[in-house]
Image (tube, rainbow over all chains, first blue to last red; front, side):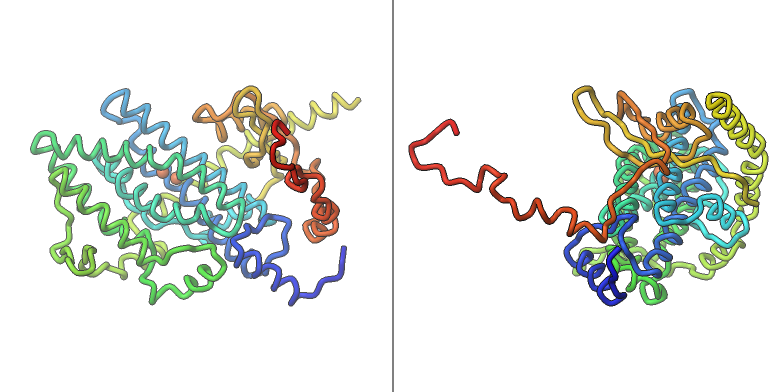
Length: 315
Length: 95
Ligand SMILES: [Fe+2]
Ligand SMILES: [Fe+2]
């Protein structure tokens, strides 16, 4: 290999970013860029996987076969999203099992939204509509992320997400337009999921120190507050249309800016959940650990079988 | 709690007859058969494919990106390989 010094490598890297040329796995990249991506992509993967738990809770209790088939397909997609992302993180030289162990030890985070319980069927509607809706807002700009494998994984994910949001909206609107009891269920779900959904975009820009660096690296294309505003602006009219009330007395339309303004987000709650003290944090991580430990013998047996067969074929 | 990992496989999908297999991503599986079954579940849930290839990732040899210039430069200087290099006089058609 040619001798190239660090300054030249950094200049070549920056020039690719400037020209919107994607960075691919074998290309040289700054150590911090790699580290940031490993952290972000593995946490994204964990969110997809842990995200299956709150919805998995309702698969056996879906109100009819159609709803059950749809929810099952939706949850299976989330497993797929996790797998695309673990593959992407492996292209950066990270060890897949190590990143999973980091989730289990509490070192790695995942989206705090999945630490809330799903107490009624209406929550399946609220999750698809709001949580997948917010995920779409976050993920669409990531399709243009500077790191090729992450961007390509996001293209696949985004194609699948709109089904998720629509099936959720179908559930919630069916309830909202149903009997008074059903409407009450839908409103209750919206009341519980609205604020946590807004928190999914992360802290306000002023309190998000890594945003600028990620924007410079073109990993991130929009700030947390920009995406949150976009989500609010499209979601408020959807709630109105099905006769539900956004649980925010300070919510108002600003004619001049053309945007909705909201009350204050409870960031204390957000940080409490992020640091492990949400309603379901322990339960979620325990479920993931149990799945890994209980399945261990199956994975070991499959490998032993494959190795034995290989040896037999070789002899 | 780590363990011995299943090998990594690269997955290639032919989306329909008449097209090449195209790289779509990777996955872990104990053997080739399981890799194909997993690839079916992970990469073709919406009829994205009619055929799957899997190859163990460590069997792939790649060109070195830092030598891309040297490797591909010879093609850049041979513009005469493209039809647009040539002037076709007015009045000549079907060429
Ligand atoms: Fe997802
Ligand atoms: Fe989703």
